[in-house]
Length: 201
Image (cartoon, rainbow, N blue to C red):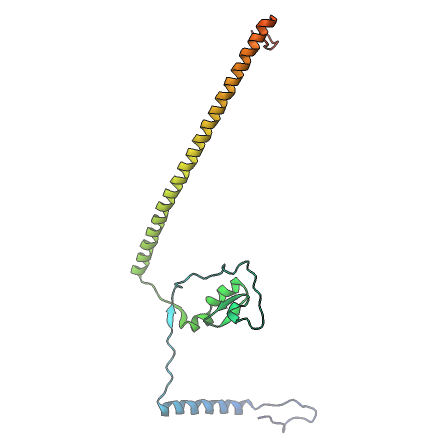
């Protein structure tokens, strides 16, 4: 306890006897162990599941850009920020929410430890095969979609090319008509043509 016997008159600080408190703590621990042995109730260590994948998509964008009126009676789940129903807490931004759901406290509340199951060679090979199949399927879908897009673009280019050709033909036809009128006018006036003044060699 606090001993004031060996201190000087001007020293008003408490002095604690560390040995005495250490003995008291050891005595209390030994009494608790004896009580557990007598009752036969030794608390088994908590066995938690290994860490596993989430089977749901984390919703970070549903409330993005929305305005909510919050009053004193608004439930915590509907307040501003991201609500974790497992830990019953509200996190203010998406980065901290991701940190929270990947963190130790949240995983413990879900009944999981932070240890990951060690994969065997067969499991790794199966995962590689599954990922390879997924990539091939995506590539097939992508190739089909890409091909359809290219075909549409080619059709549009062909249509535009045809329209341009038709316009060019109309322009040429109109120019030919104008030249014929110019030739007739030149013949009436006695000129051979309205060509350039440069001499051709």
